[in-house]
Length: 222
Image (tube, rainbow, N blue to C red):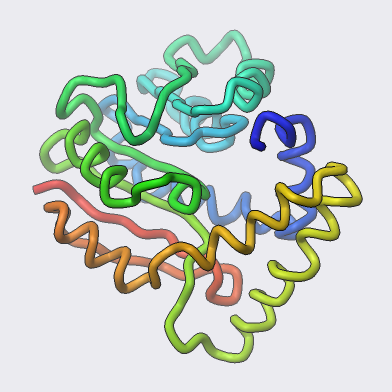
């Protein structure tokens, strides 16, 4: 599915969020900025937004962008300029990361949590490859228990407007119908934070964006 929509993925992200995803991703980068002295991993990098932005701001930091979709990675590599020698894009499985334990000072992701088959296994793998005192910053659409009215409005946009935009501009209605359905399959935000704690992470916190529909979850490995 992601191979099919790779060509128009960035355009649709801008349209569906009115550019808001760029602000949320900038906050994700800031959450890891003090870890830029060590290697950084971007899990489910997609077309490379986070990995490219981090590498441009910290050109001497080692940054790896990993994704399961070959077409998404092809788009990311097309966007990569020759002045980012420390940035590497790899194809791989987030549930079986091809890295040694404690390899990264920081790990980030944007809109990845909804797209894995086993969230607990993802967290175990992130914990395994994260160095001690390292931090994760995980950005995604998150369900809230008892959401306020303004959050319900944003959820209605996601449920009814986004699939129509996808059908019109990407000619792929099923892919963008999947998006709201995938959010509903995620555990509520408090449960996601509890799962991180159960994995071993500490200092688990979150910030909300997008009228309460988007969460940035941060946590550290002790």
